[in-house]
Length: 68
Image 1 (cartoon, rainbow, N blue to C red):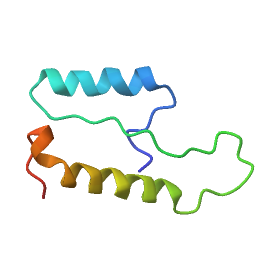
Image 2: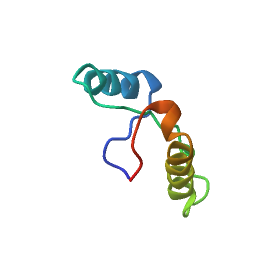
Image 3: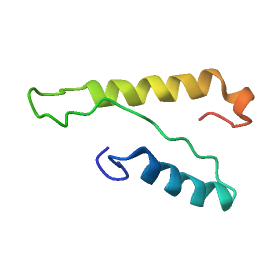
């Protein structure tokens, strides 16, 4: 999950907009990070990602996307 991650919201949004302008559906996921490095995140970023995918699948028709 490390590739494609950005620390600043604006950077992620700019990349998403470039793909959107080319006709792709894009989503920017804000997930748990550990900038302080005080403790391990363990599986939390993957849990965040799976929740986002589940949300998109459950609301696919509202976003005009085909899950799968």
